[in-house]
Image 1 (tube, rainbow, N blue to C red):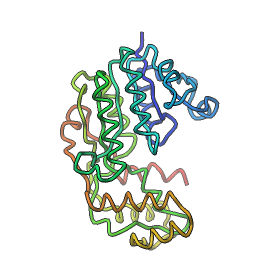
Image 2 (cartoon, one colour; image 1 turned 45 degrees about the vertical axis):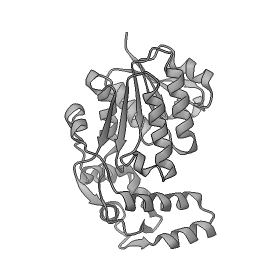
Image 3 (cartoon, one colour; image 1 turned 90 degrees about the vertical axis):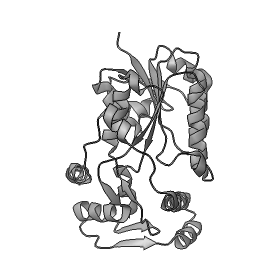
Image 4 (spheres, rainbow, N blue to C red; image 1 turned 120 degrees about the vertical axis):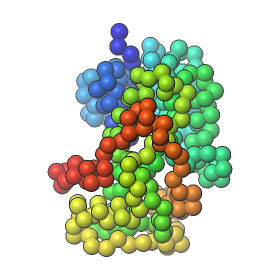
Length: 282
């Protein structure tokens, strides 16, 4: 009988690649979705879709029935309570693995930043569930770079003097799927970094050169200006992005990816590879 993995957040930018790689690795993939019809439009008939929400313990317990593992991909205000609910529901279901996407800078010393505190508490609830776990702490994803381009303008917030080993979502997803077949990956926390160190400004410039050649200049918006614009435009997304960028400018990238690369096979996608894969989309 094939093992079933429940994927939470399987229709998102980072959850869907995990679901696809689990499928390719021979797992049955079950998806928890708030809207079953919407999820079906994004996923083919291979995927079993069950309707439910992470805020509803009963629907979680039903979705987890018969599962080998569960992958948690959540964001926003629901991330911490959702992870806690999933960990609680999983503890009595006989699961063999919980995987969770956290972040490269998650540690006690950075809990002054609310997002990091919530992620660390989510990790703690997973550790305390009694289910073998694998926590992934990836750095910035290549898929985030298009967010720095709006119509005919490209920009970064602040100086952004810290380089990051940008990771492709597909490489990360492959590593998550691989962890389900390795006993050695149980009760581990892996830092996931790409092979090339790049400044965000340089990444945005290379992205524009390849896909938006009409954009010749990358603007640098100081944080005070980002704050004013976000208030005037009532743009919560921009305000949050500004705070997130300021945080990373202060703490930088953390962690050593050596163990993850050794056990799960190192990422192979370069930034130029990733750019080349997107050219046909235009």
